[in-house]
Image (cartoon, rainbow, N blue to C red; front, side, top):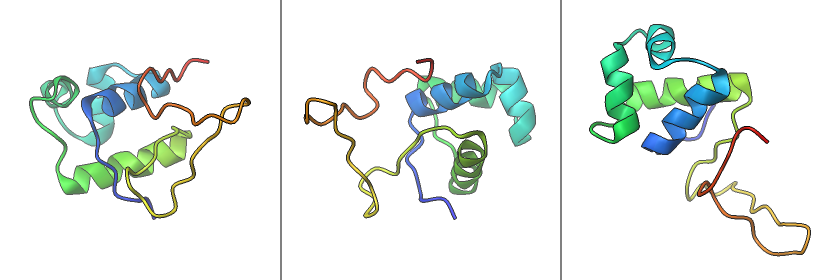
Length: 95
């Protein structure tokens, strides 16, 4: 099962864009309103625990590269020069 992830506004938007969905289409997938997705992406509100778990399952299904922050099984990625890569700051799903 998916690790518990803190779904930040940036991660939610990146997941939605990774899936190629509009806010309205993601809302339909989750059974919620487009306004709710907008509020998550602006940081006004955060997904509830059950919705956060569902987002993690969707992320796994679509191959979205997310990590649970502080997870014990977290693997630090190294750049070719041996330096550590940046977490999600500056992250682009379109490489």
